[in-house]
Image (cartoon, rainbow, N blue to C red; front, side, top):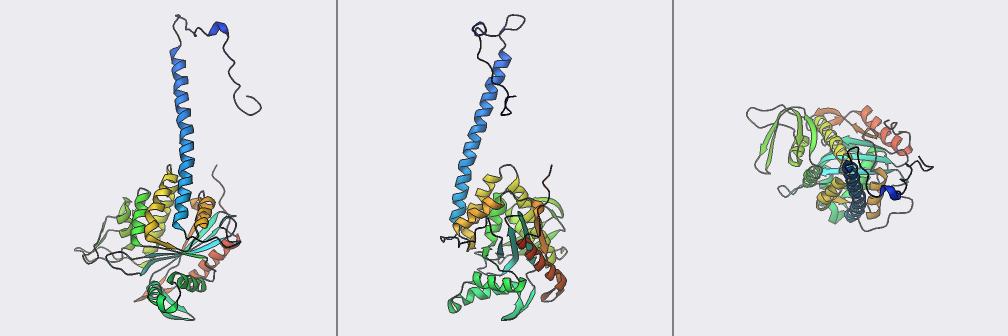
Length: 351
């Protein structure tokens, strides 16, 4: 080895060796020449792969920028250096319904220094009692704010951000809304998800085209099936399958998110993230700036799955509401604050 830790360079062949090396029978050593040629081909492909990968990553960055809004990132707000909190809404909006009920409500806090994230999920039927807001189900506020946009002069996303920030005791910096089609397309873009279906699920509704038919056990689900998996609540089939509740749904959401993260971190993940970005672009609303989108990608691309902490909040179902467990809610609030303050540290890297 030389001082750089590399093997010593092969000396130039002497004049007597240029006629070709021979074996004991006087035949040329073709095998060594063949191996060298093969190694050169492999090395060339490897270099090309790096160059193409770098070019593709640059393309992904530009794709990410296209999904954000055309505004500068406020001073001191770069996700590369500042902990950020985002509200994530998954709505049932699709051509079949035209509604905006938020079936998925999550708040995520991310810390760039510790490379950790906490995601708090709330049941869609949570009864919200909050000063300044009429008490109602959590999933009803976004469509109500949408209907009030013209008269209130405020975007529904901003109103949701303010309300949820007040409810959870954190400043929420951004809101991102995905509809059903975005969810289906994102799952398909990563090649589907591996989950364990907790029970047989059967439900049909000809009005909006819903056709849920899943069998309990380990499954690989495509986008349509994954959406059925997280949405399932009750059965109208014969025979009926066991009902589900909001807490089961939140667990299934986390299971799908974990599987998607696994897929994104797997071989070809850079390619998959480009596909995901293209898939959700037309079915996503966000107030994240274009440059901030790039900041998120560069900062959290290599975050470990073990450092993404899911904190579902449960409660008691008393129709038509879920009455939140106040202890769990307090713990969820604290978890968000601890992530922002850096108290939650990354797990040791695997050997």
